[in-house]
Length: 305
Image 1 (cartoon, helix red, strand yellow):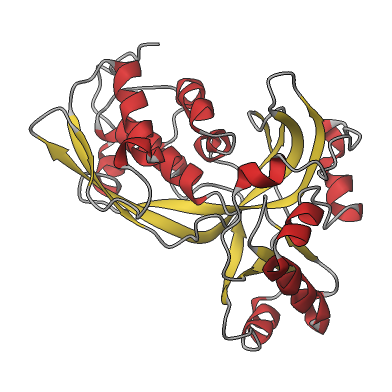
Image 2 (cartoon, rainbow, N blue to C red):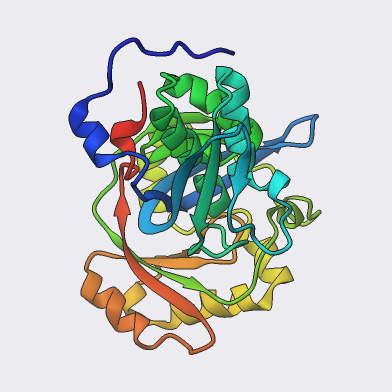
């Protein structure tokens, strides 16, 4: 793959808002439902899920280098820099475009690792989106998404830039508009490895597939269905306790579920004030956030068509 370097200057107003001095957000996602519909011969699972972005985010900053190296300035403990998704995303973009420019990356990590909020995937997507703009590569959304999928099944939805109904392994995306809502997200203090959940023999892998046009009906009548949840609850009592606590709060009205493979769980609210009331009662050992649901990625104006 090679990108076509644009011959025209970028929109001056866009360049004023997003440049080398900017802080680039990498938003969290939640799964409003998540069904495992099968397993492919290569071991990957086929899914149907509804992704929504929320207002929580990591932040990335970029500094051009005089050499041709990609350097993560603050590596995460236990994660070798060369395997970090931010470095892998930048290197993938350089290979695809043929550019030799170097960059230093600073990642301010707020989203919990192993939390089911897509933090690492979102970080990788923000690297692709931001450097495609900063380096003026002109890569299309389809080209960026082709680089995104090998980095992780959740990365394409962040590059897509919109809440979406997803199928396949997460790469077949249909943008959707969702009712306004805010969410109380609870992290019960444990990290859940996604691979361990998907490899469990107890995981249900035969949920009947729905038609893509029926996602709204599933949201209305199947809220809370996450096929990964029973496995996570069985393996991690902390997740079970957080779900039980949220379900016991009268304000949640049963609209409680786990995001992704866990560990974070969340409840949906029509009013932020109600969510804040519940947050005030959160056990001290847990972390919690009240945040709005977003239909569009905060960097949507940088995402090419």
